[in-house]
Image 1 (tube, rainbow, N blue to C red):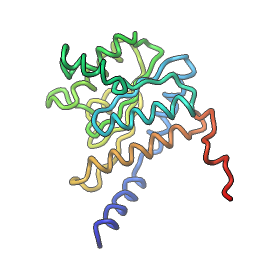
Image 2 (tube, helix red, strand yellow; image 1 turned 45 degrees about the vertical axis):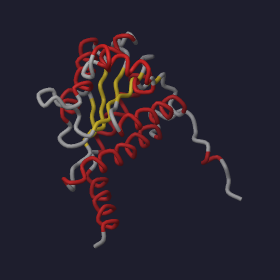
Image 3 (cartoon, rainbow, N blue to C red; image 1 turned 180 degrees about the vertical axis):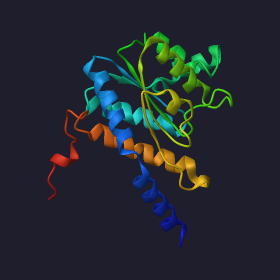
Image 4 (cartoon, rainbow, N blue to C red; image 1 turned 135 degrees about the horizontal axis):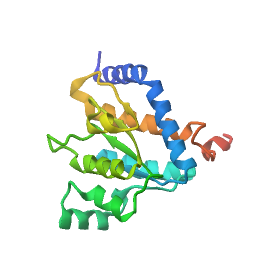
Length: 200
């Protein structure tokens, strides 16, 4: 079997193992944030920062959320990194945004953060900040889910099928899951454009 077929077979196996109840729990938790008038802060690093930016667009446009991604403001992000350090960059941004109990975090991460290993410490400190004020925490993560899975109110862990390809599968399937969420009837309030256009 060639690499393309192997990769696609792995993807299919992961999709079949996704926890449907966990996805429903994230949808329910996010709907509760919106119903309560809260804001949604979407966090990710690296490829997950790209997901965060894209997801902010969809949650705002399709689901009627007031949503933000700290990584979209490169000036503030780099100023905070330069002046305060990498680990506290998201917590500082959330404090400046007056994160409160009605708000929610949605975290995209391959590992979910690990305080002891010092990996994605910025996500861990953001979770600390959310828990401190009583904000909701949701995640779409890989591996064992890390700190995000252990402390979130609802979290989807992308199953590991091939250990040498955890990152591409987690990031690829995270996009599938959050696109599912913005299409979920509990969340979507506006139609997407292309489905309303008939082909010629």
